[in-house]
Image 1 (cartoon, rainbow, N blue to C red):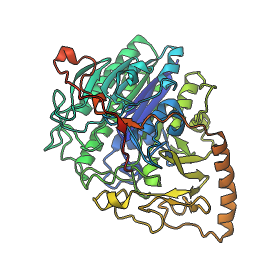
Image 2 (image 1 turned 135 degrees about the horizontal axis):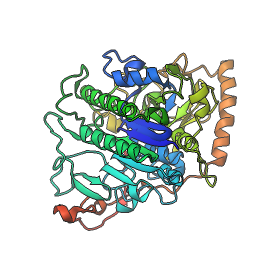
Image 3 (image 1 turned 90 degrees about the horizontal axis):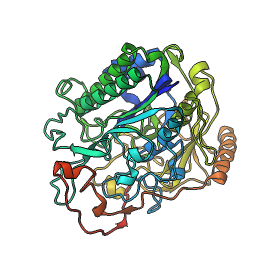
Image 4 (image 1 turned 180 degrees about the horizontal axis):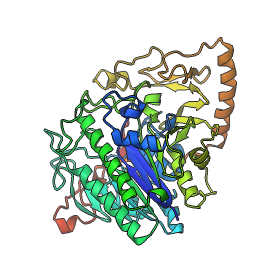
Length: 511
């Protein structure tokens, strides 16, 4: 029996699977935030140790440069354009699940924990869900057996006159709200939420280990998402401001979880995977922004900084320690690989984009596969081998840029980080990511190299588009009446709020 435990932070993810259990960890952090990838402060000793004991993936990608679509892709094994986590309100716009969103994860999608039930897995999510906050979209209605966390990110605080604070749930009922029962200091950024989430995860693992029951844990703390927070023990300890403090606490939490697996004697039967749901945000200021290392731009963009993520696989005795794989991977592979490790197969009635990584994990073999970079309803780029071809470029609009919103601070590349949507479908911009990871020097269109790569890439793109059937877009409609006014359980707490009249509108997605 394989146990599955998944740990997820806002920008980084950790996934574990083994004959006893599986873990998935997801945090919001950048490729350059880890010491093992060269972060000079070296403030992630536990993640660095995890890499030395497992397999490091320098070529690992999210499915979207924003959180909600990426999380939907991880749990369905499908690109957001297929599972409906995109918008058609405007061209190539990122969309997610704020409080006013009407939609959420489609009932027609099959999520990882739903399939794991066939082998007796008990599944729990700890932390942020972000796949829709209306009751029909919540985790317990989509295969998870337990949940402790929030449906949305921890924006706020609000005074309830126009927007309620985000609720936290214990299973199917709210137990309080951010900034109220679960305090986050606006002034200092102090909060015990990561410690609460850690305790929830550790207790769940212990209970399942004692019951000798396979489990899947998806751990998704959101401390590195602005407004960034950390507990008192970690505040002021980093060389990188409050964001670094949060990273240190998340790193500590990973260390506690891995140590707990060893203590319980289930480390040899648990597969753990750590990665991120999008690149580090570069717009949150010097004290709340992460690092994407040598890669261009960050969150919200389909340049490497927005899509390439840190990733580590850990399974003592099964995955060779200290290995570095050149395999190109994606978060969707965690769906397919986890099922395979549990002795299950992915649904055959739909296109699954995830690759089974077992040959890579156990033998470090390589499988050639493309990576498609989507922004909303538009395929922006594709990676084939070491080459990346941009069919559209865009960072953000001039209007937003002039307001101080810059997804590529200090990294502007003429003709590449464009502030208008630029189409290159007739003559894609092509980069060699091995010698130019920062996407600064397009290959000359007159070169033999360009023509050879273009032929190869064109074939891949044509095949992809021929088989693509977009899902029904879930992120088009908004309505203030659907916000978290009266979540399940609010009656017992005396915290129900009266919603405004329903007045739906088409959501505006500026990026």
